[in-house]
Image (cartoon, rainbow, N blue to C red; front, side, top):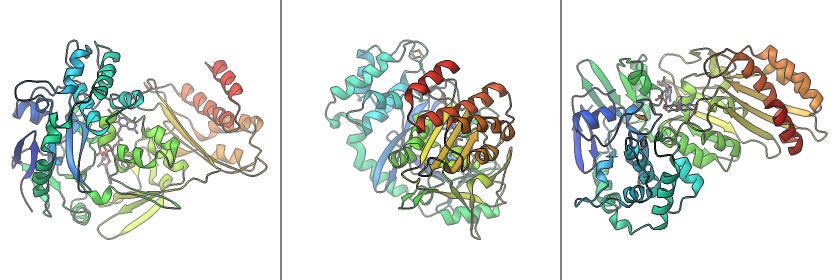
Length: 489
Ligand SMILES: Cc1cc2nc3c(=O)[nH]c(=O)nc-3n(C[C@H](O)[C@H](O)[C@H](O)COP(=O)(O)OP(=O)(O)OC[C@H]3O[C@@H](n4cnc5c(N)ncnc54)[C@H](O)[C@@H]3O)c2cc1C
Ligand code: FES
Ligand code: FES
């Protein structure tokens, strides 16, 4: 065991010995280091004012990603390179091309959001030399501006990619090999413990060490991407002790693509899943692209989205509709179960003391099957679902329903299949008449709640309409789909 964590902050080596492991990187930057370029807007991962880059070694390469410093815990930083907006300009004050483009394109007014935007643009600049407008918009999904409007900021991104200067200008490109060497030296096979008074944050070196630790301390809070747990601290002021950080465990971050399907490690981030699975299961890719903003997708994990048991988590309905199997692990072994069986009731999952989510297997959908996911939100981007529906249909050669799985989020206390509706459809002709009958069966399956995202009546009607939409989409009748949409509007 080692009682400190080490990382690089801009150019400086940081050793933390006594610190609250569940304090945020944002507080560390602003309060302890006086790096006040990183701003606090919402403290919940929504506004992007606190965006910084985190670099880490992965498969022998140094990879930087944007994250929200407001919900990233200091205890999770070992072996990383934290880059703040202060690191961008040259020593003589010359702005980085990304910053200069924001000036040239009038991308800033009050300026509060600007460092966050600059860091998101910089993250994009590092990874994509010729981003499309859609890619730029995606990179900025997690940044809010209340005065400038987004057009000048998007123009700044376009300008900087069009006039891209030599990478020698760029601090991270210049320093790349020395940072890699320094990060390499920080790699350790020791379990690390960061503590302050009685509070402990444990960073196991391996998956096996994590399994043993969790068996010994089953009441510890596992922290993966912290996009849920971060808010328990910043919004609910909960004190977590001890916490076990697992975001660095590469054994949990693999995606195996096989002939029969995909095995996704629990620690795979949304961004990783998006790039690996979009071509394989496009509807799943489109769904993941609408989860949070880029920073949240870089941090949040598929395992966390399942483990938290949320009734409105977006990936569970899609994975249930695809027939996914969950693998839970303990120090003593593993067990697998259909994902749908993991969710027992609101706030309760089939997980024993010391068990954690290790991976999920998603069978490859048959090329002739139809799979669609509908995320219904008030805003298109960066919004939690009022309801989410995922439908997976296999038709027989005579267009009767051979197999169907309908899974919903936001309609019950857990992500859940609509079994009565499925029964009303199976072996029936895939027609408007069959759907009309099946729409009524949805009343048997669900009695949703009214909350501030949607009323019960809205949820129920929308769920029924999504079934009709799925029929029209799968039977290739765009005109009828359009008429239906206008009638329902
Ligand atoms: C701004 C913002 C926007 C968001 N938008 C969306 C959205 O559009 N759709 C959506 O579905 N969610 C959204 N979320 C919620 C969040 O991104 C997800 O629930 C996320 O998947 C949680 O994963 P994580 O790795 O961050 O989990 P963490 O916060 O680290 O953990 C969440 C829970 O899971 C447990 N846990 C984590 N990993 C494991 C494991 N391997 N085994 C056992 N337990 C584990 C933790 O102990 C904790 O109880 C959003 C969150 C934020 C902050
Ligand atoms: S302060 Fe708003 S996302 Fe961090
Ligand atoms: S410039 Fe004021 S919030 Fe963006």
